[in-house]
Length: 151
Image (cartoon, rainbow, N blue to C red; front, top):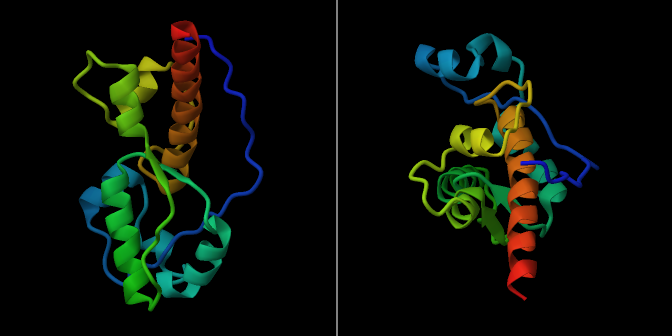
């Protein structure tokens, strides 16, 4: 695919979070994140307010919305905040619209189909956001092009 990825990153919010429990070795193998990385990191409740100020009422683009929103809303409840009610876009659902004949719609499959070759730490929050952003923009462009051709 050769469509342009017209976007730039204006602001970002990146931090490790101390999960207040041991990170299992299989998670470290997948993400590269160990207890060492999060030892001095803030706990979620310590950054929750800054996180909420960052996302405000913006539309959230997420790979697998159901999973992430359930996780985020649980952490927000535990920290004494209300659940998010932001509008969301799920890149899995976008992929199902763009790649109708395909069975797999995980982030690796989507990135492969869209020729996204970023050198990032996959399965880290920041790395996955970078891939998801690129995938969203490319699929949005495909969908826009497809809609304009139907007119």
